[in-house]
Length: 259
Image (cartoon, rainbow, N blue to C red; front, side, top):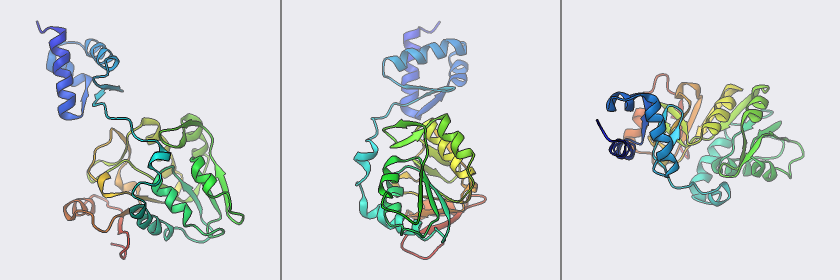
């Protein structure tokens, strides 16, 4: 019989190698019950060796910098994406804007009165728009999550589900051709998915390093996007895979004509 200590060491090695594991697959591999595996995962999580998630576990990562810490990183690159996002806004639109530092750069470029209303779950974005008079600014409620700089949770999702807007500008931690858009936090993923569902037009802008970079929680497949805004120097092979997604969103290279 395999010793529990040996099994747990093998689980940690598997998580480190694969990034994530499923409890059912581990139970089959080690010829034991899922309850035993779940107990292993609880103990390993408590020891800081992995992170338990629903149905399994994933590799622990370093704490992500706060929204405020990230706000001014890569400002020039985010500014290029932000200008492309501004061009997505039609006069009189009601725009739902997700929390995110690229989206913060985007709202800084909006002219007062171009959009009828901006609705956001980000206090920082709402404050940035405090000077506006012709454009109505609406801040969604919920539990504030400092790492995301946003209101998250069931209350936020319920408010979003009562909305119908012209345009949603949503952020993503990951964009993969085969899987779609992902987030590093389950509550963020749920809020972002609700925002996409509330909008007639949906756009996401991402920096190169977020392409083909797996995130554990699915937001939505690429088929739910109308436009994906990328940096002009995106790797050609990555761009080709995204264009071959079925059905693929319109892909725009920021600073160039729509692709």
